[in-house]
Each structure stands twice: as structure tokens, then as C-alpha cells.
Length: 76
Image (cartoon, rainbow, N blue to C red; front, side):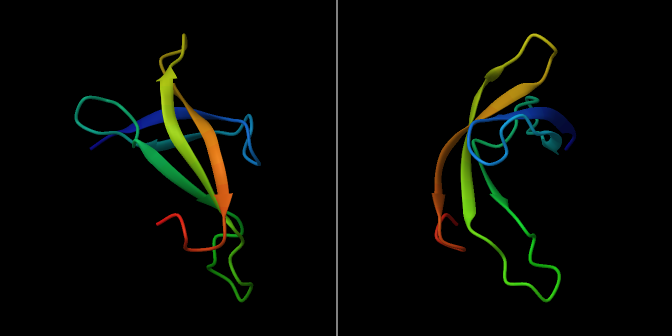
């Protein structure tokens, strides 16, 4: 499994570009949950920000559009 470049559109991660896991056909996951902070430290993780795969862009990457924000763990 490789990675694909994704630009997040809307919501708290608007404009963020990062690599996400790609399926065998090179597409990113259908849905992605963004959390901040990531919960690895002593601080309680923040809310879940749900994004959905949108469309490929002209640069060969994809966009993920903002859907909603839920309380921690609700989007899973």
C-alpha cells in the first residue's frame, strides 16, 4: 500500500496538505477522522473532524472535504 497527497478543504484543517494511505487503485480512504491533539500526551484528545474523499486535483493529489465535527470518538 502506498500513499497519496491529500488537501483538506473546509473545517479546521482547511488548506492542510498531507500524505494518507492509498488503496490499490491509488485513491485515499473514503473517510478520514482528523484529531487534534493526537492523544499521545497527557492532554485529552480534542474533537473528531470528519472529512470525506472528494475528487482528484490537477496536481495528481486528492481533496478531502469537511463534513462535520463530533465529540471525541463519536465519528469512529
